[in-house]
Image (cartoon, rainbow, N blue to C red; front, side, top):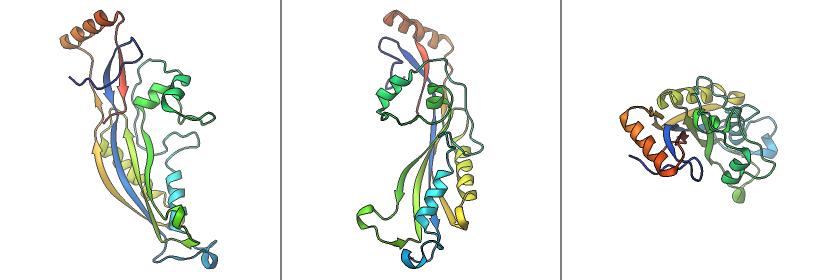
Length: 213
């Protein structure tokens, strides 16, 4: 029994029955064989960092939903997660929009999510008027329950390799992959646990998902 998940709300117990999986990769974009001055070549020669930014931007649609083809979704629990509660718990700033479409729990537990979690490029403190030859980023993908993480990683790699801007050279290095999970809440043990939660809290438990680990 794993007990480090949370309750659905204060006084409302929950069983975690789904987990999203996770996989990642490092994508490197190259446009030059050496750095050159932007004053001499800027405006005609593409730099790798700008090309990388354009490539990473293709990972999402304008509404923030994931644009990688071949990623699947699963059914979401019928639970209401109020938007104001989400904003308070996540710390999203006023005026910043949420990503994607559908219910909040569906987007959190049952749909894929892509995040750029790191970029290797010249830092602001040492920036110069230079067109740099290469830049790279680490991309993390949360995988919806029901799809193998290795398959989802394949789709992510295919997307990155096929959306190179301006003919830039794209090299993708695969990282780790952990599968999502689904645990049916059925059978005598589940029934006993449900009864125990109901007796202890005075209300029946709900089934929830988690981000995964």
